[in-house]
Amino acid sequence: MEHFEINGGSRLKGTVKIDGAKNAALPILAATILCEGETILHNVPDLQDVRQMITLLNRLGITCERREEGGLRLRAEDEMNCHAEYELVSRMRASVCVMGPLLAKRKRSQVSMPGGCAIGDRPINLHIQGLRSLGADFDLAGGDIVLRAKKLKGTELFLGGAFGSTVTGTANVLMAATLAEGRTVIESAACEPEITDLAEFLNKCGAQITGHGTPRITIDGVDSLQGVEHTVIPDRIETGTFIIAAAITNGELHLENGRLEHLIAVVDRLRHLGLNIERYEKGVQVSSARRLEPIELTTQPYPGFPTDLQAQTMALLCLADGNSVVTEKIFPDRFMHVAELNRMGAHIRKEGPTVIIEGVKKLIGAPVMASDLRASAALILAGLIAKGQTRLHRAYHIDRGYQRIEEKLTAVGADIRRVQD
Image (cartoon, rainbow, N blue to C red):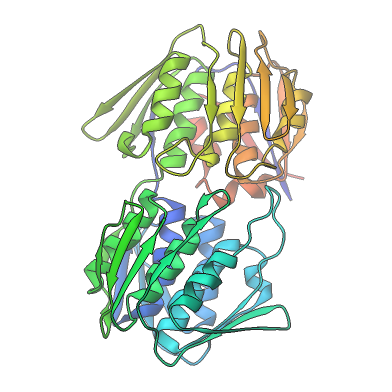
């Protein structure tokens, strides 16, 4: 196992290249199950979750060849296996994205029920509900979700949940509906850019999808889809993380490929905090005021403030001049980083789904433990500004969503290294 050692106090300055979006790449990889012929993808990040998805696709008969950096060539060679086993699904919840494509293309899907999650309960009942609405028969067998359908039929269905629209659920139903008979209308569909990117990929393949990017998506089923060439969108969460990295170190970064149009709510809140964020032809330029104003924010489904940037923003708010309030509306239990930030000298108090952050003059380096992907990013950001050394254990969490983050940070002035335990 590995950990990070971070010596705080360095001001970040320079250029960081933003990689492809993990949360767009994963469902697009799953969608290649639907395609005849060869698919070529560009800008696919080399992340642990992506490697897990490729391993799963290999088990399902999809060959995958690495090309140039960020490039993949995929083709379905064997369509007999329809079983996504617990061994793989338990390592990555996004594996459930193969459920819809397997059902639509191979008439049967057997996917292990995902296990627990450090950021709270994430049920997949809406996925199953949506696929059953399309005509699938459902059963449970030995911890596996089994779905069967000789032919899916289009219908009108609702995918809203207790905490808003389901992103992976929308992806699953959207992919399945592309080969269904007739028209499918998804109401309360997720509007995230990653869903839009998936829909645009499928349309290139021959699907007939309209309304993506809105809460009402319409899909007219087709007989088959063909493999195409597609470039995955840049990762908005990585962009937001590096914007905050510039702010917390009072630095100045140019984020190549960053797209502000995918971060409107984040930019709004961070500008109130005191950041200078500007759009350029090929990316984003960010710098920070020396005094950070306290703010209030609430995580919401897109286009609201993303839950995946909540922890990183909280690390920044620890240094604001006053009291800030953060309310988590997507995953109310997503606060395991609070105790670790308090170990570093932060003053954070949790009250239900809300935390109150009293700004402090400085953070102090300490041994801390990452509980999940975004919490690990928050603790790295805190370590960049903390006095002394921060040792972040469970470095593997960060590799699920950030490609070689320590190399990118070192290149712009951070003192961070990965160490074998």
